[in-house]
Length: 223
Image (cartoon, rainbow, N blue to C red; front, side, top):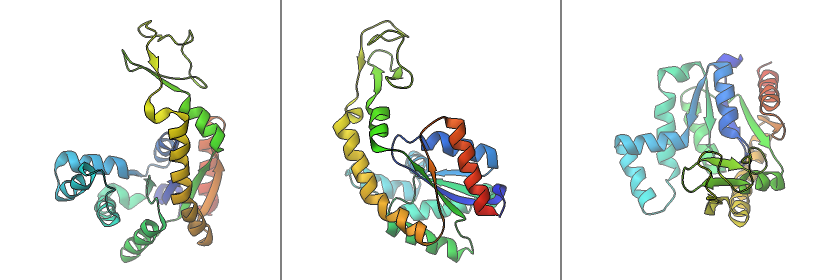
């Protein structure tokens, strides 16, 4: 399979830059981008039967069950733009989801070609995520590591000293999110490794370097 007809999964921890890399790969290869987060939001907004079912769980603060997500992914894969390949972003997150995805694709005579994993050190992720500051006046977002405000603690956009750290960017919250990620996704990494589908790429460093390495990994899987 060549790059313009590949079916791939992109895995990586929160803060690893998955969104950016997903977009770069999709643009480069001309394949469809399937983000389960976007699918869910759209289904809920459109009030589809699946969206209404999912919304009931979300309202109750519960996780949307795997079978609903799989059904959404299956419907999405049936759309014309996915015939030429697709990238799954944010899914699967667990081994049962990976099993269900594999079964569903098998029924359609399809399979995943490669699973790309962005590897970033936890401390690095904590620095990235807990470094975020938002302006409580304007909503402008800064990062103390990557894109700090021109003057410490002061918003470039409105000059106010209103830069705050959001609750979900606090170090303890970030560490907890990473713990959940490792618990859920650790077994998934082993699962795809055992199938010979996993390609790990260093997610530290420059965005374009990482994109180039991901494309290289796809090429070696396609060879």
